View (cartoon, rainbow, N blue to C red):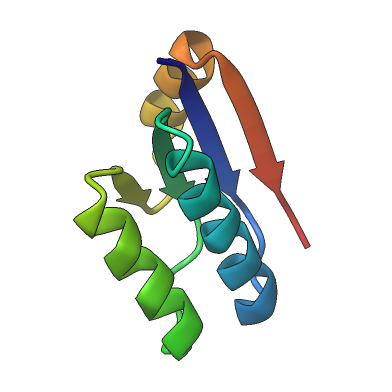
Length: 85
């Protein structure tokens, strides 16, 4: 099993939702996905649903900008995706 880091720096709710849905998809392959959501989660229902799905799947989501956590994750992950926009 690989650990895949998904760092979301996007601010637009649509882009955040897209990144979270991608994280859900990555987790469905059986890999561990760890998400860092640097911007506050919006009230967008698609974002809320993706966050709830990740929680049900046991995939951790860290909210807020924590440089130490991001650094640790980037050093230990097998693959990294960074979403901006």
